[in-house]
Image (spheres, rainbow, N blue to C red):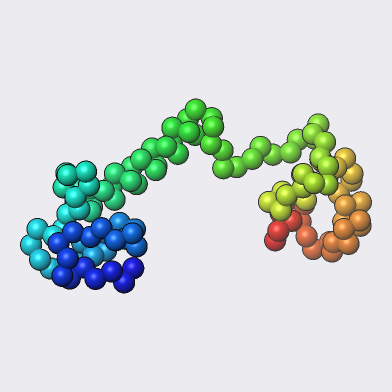
Length: 123
């Protein structure tokens, strides 16, 4: 961040993003800690705490059912509009969702026969 840290006892610059790189690189004894709210916090402990909170939030959200990374597959009974088609969807799901035959989908979209039914649109 181009902050002069060599001659400073405390860093209070607004440019400091608290990345801890200067603390980790400093050869001076006792410098390898960051004071947050008058308590010393080791950089590795802070990093472990942040990662634990991040992963913990994801695991709790998944277990409660709030966080879902993979959408539900399109079933034969579902009806899609053109706006709901996504690049991750296989051609067979698009065909089922639009209620048209896969051969008709190939014809309308001018796809070559080399594309497989299970291949997604973005490939």
